[in-house]
Structures are given as C-alpha cells and as structure tokens.
Amino acid sequence: MKIVIGCDHGALELKKEVLKVLAEFKDIETEDVGTFDTESVDYPDIAEKVCGKITKGEADRGIVLCGTGIGISIAANKIKGIRAALCGDVFSARMSREHNDANVLAMGGRVTGFGPAGEIVRTWVTTEFSQGERHIRRIEKMMALENK
Ligand code: RB5
Picture 1 (cartoon, helix red, strand yellow):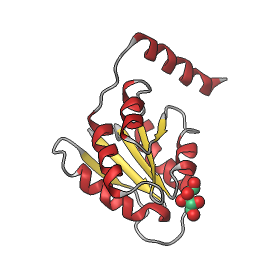
Picture 2: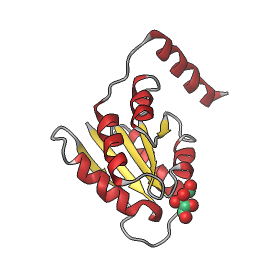
Picture 3: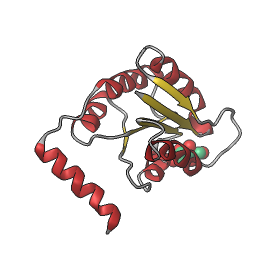
C-alpha cells in the first residue's frame, strides 16, 4: 500500500513522527509532499497535493495534518473521491475505515500527542473496510452528494 502524506507548518513535527510509525510497516510505501520547514503555508494547497495523488491513482491512501486537523480535512473533503476522517482517538480511526472506508486520515499537530497519534495511525493503516451492505449503501449515497 502506498500512503501519501502532507502537513502544513502547524504539524511538521507530527508528520515526522507519523513517518516513523509508517516505517514500522514493511508493506507500506510512503511519499511526503511537504511542507518541509516551519515557513507558513496554506493547508488547502497541501490537501490538494495529497488528495491529487489518490484521485490520480498514484497512491492508495493519504494522511493530512495541520494545526487542528480541521482545515485540512475540510479542504480534503472538497475533492471528489476523497473521504477524509479527522481522528483524535483510536476508536474513530477504526470506525473511519470499517464503516466509512476513509481514504484519508486527518490529525491535528497542535491537538493530538505523538503517543495517541501513533496508535491512531497503526489502527488506521491496518483496518480494512467491513464491506457491509449498509455501509456500502451509505458510502454510495455520500459520494453521490458530490454530484448534487
Ligand atoms: C495554521 O495556523 C492553522 O490555521 C492550521 O494549521 C489549521 O489548524 C487550520 O485548520
């Protein structure tokens, strides 16, 4: 599985930590699209870079990080085909995969500590979509909203 990751200046340290966690998984390839320093950047640009890789089929899933995780998750969810889940706990991370088939995980570098973030990432990358009929129906309805 290929995971593309990006952050704004508010989550630079969290991104480094998440990359360390992802390196634990031999079957995960990562691509880091920045930002790479503390200079202020606009999180919608990062969301666009990460999600563009997914919608073009160049990555399977993405992780987006900003100060709160809020702005970058809202931006990601404006992009067709993206289901971004802002998670601050392991249960939400698991549900976002099992029920929502989230293809993007968002977290906040000023909100979630390294320990919990690591567990969220481990859970999110190892949890499969449940394939439940009701969840497929709801996801189809969710995605149809993009065209209304
Ligand atoms: C940047 O200062 C901050 O607004 C951003 O990282 C994020 O928290 C927005 O939702």
